[in-house]
Image (cartoon, rainbow, N blue to C red; front, side, top):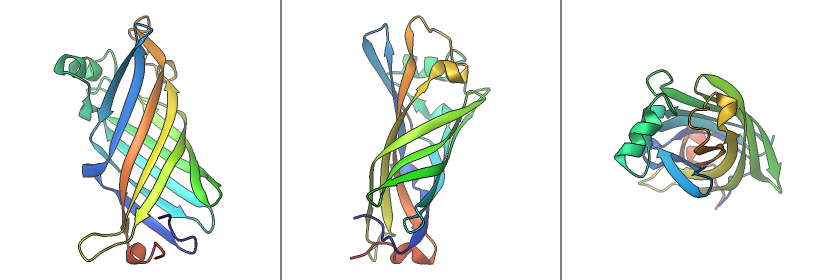
Length: 185
């Protein structure tokens, strides 16, 4: 289901069901993936005025790779330098709707102490009606690409590609009095 276009709602990110993943090429032909599991945030969507906000706070130390050694490298000053830069922020303020559905979020990513633009292409935004046991929930899926060099992450550039694909899969819990009326039957 999509949100009812006659209402607006605010959400909090359900950290237990939200993850940000990344994929980057290494050695020119191998894919390396990882994930951030410590994600919090908020969102607000108003279909009627076609406005939205989407803010994420990512715990950089929550990064996980395929094994312990790679996870330690990702946390080191060669990559995310979690001791100096413990938080990654995304603030999306401009949105584009297509055929009444949220299609794109333009915002800024703060990573490694540098802020730069990041566009997230929304591939899904669906909601489920609340029940007696569960609040109204929505799931958003979106992806975008950054360049490591734009965020002063140039270490090991001969081994690791500059372009990194980010994928956000966030479960959102509606807050406030509209939480039970956001979705039409």
